[in-house]
Length: 361
Ligand SMILES: [Fe+2]
Ligand SMILES: [Fe+2]
Image 1 (cartoon, rainbow, N blue to C red):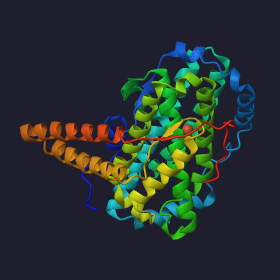
Image 2: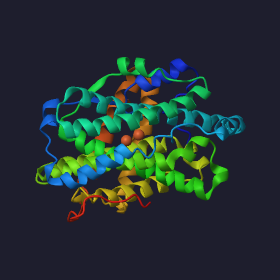
Image 3: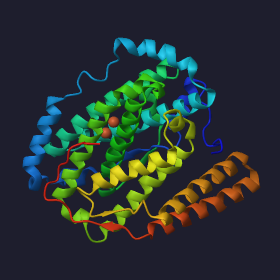
Image 4: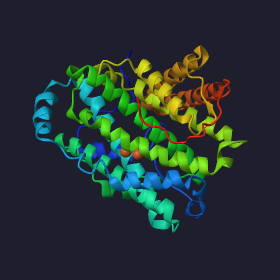
């Protein structure tokens, strides 16, 4: 696999802050939404499951998890000098991207909580913001080991916000929580089997960490199932769109950071398809369709999308008139590839009577 051109080396705290603030097609964004809609969400049809879930959040089984143990500093000291320059570059990019995405959840959930009166949703947002703020803080402390801590107050102020309709927030957030779980648990299991490939202690935290994400996803699953009109008719076209958007963003992002997965003994393509498989299996609890990510046509187009994205970033880097024309051309090719993938027939399922599932992966 060729070295990627899309990742700039983060050399200073300013670089880290700039990377977190910047927006691109594949970088995490900050969102705002319509709070009236959130106020009107009714979860009565799933009241029993909802109350049980709130008890789980109250029990807070990860209260003491996001603190470093005695071994952490020692491991960091032993392992960091061994990182190759390529791996160091991709790992720092991974930390900043993950921090931004955790903090994005924290900001969104906090903002909804502060602006609504709906007691159920308000309570949920309080718990989820609590969890995401722990996650973001824990990643930031690892960035600080490199002298690259990000000032989260500045990030909150400086990063642009994207408005998303509430139902898009529900689909996109459900998916990003569940795919987040699938990503972290797949890494955790791989490094559990191959501890010599654990090049940073943060990965030891991933198991209990991803259980938080799993539960966040469960909460959105309950909201969606309580409002079944969101899961049928023309809304299926939106679900299909978000599934593809989330999967293809992840594919392009992971393939532009091949060294990170290789260092864990994971092939980026195999890893991504395993994550898609787990995510599709989970999302059957709520979506009556899933993408046929095993079909050869899907895989061929996905790889094509990544190749086009690399060319797009090369043209962007080149700049000037020629670079500008090439960039527009590759953006068009990328959009057409996305449309071709969107049109690949999807799998259909009946929704299970029992909504909640347990994280068994
Ligand atoms: Fe999180
Ligand atoms: Fe989460």
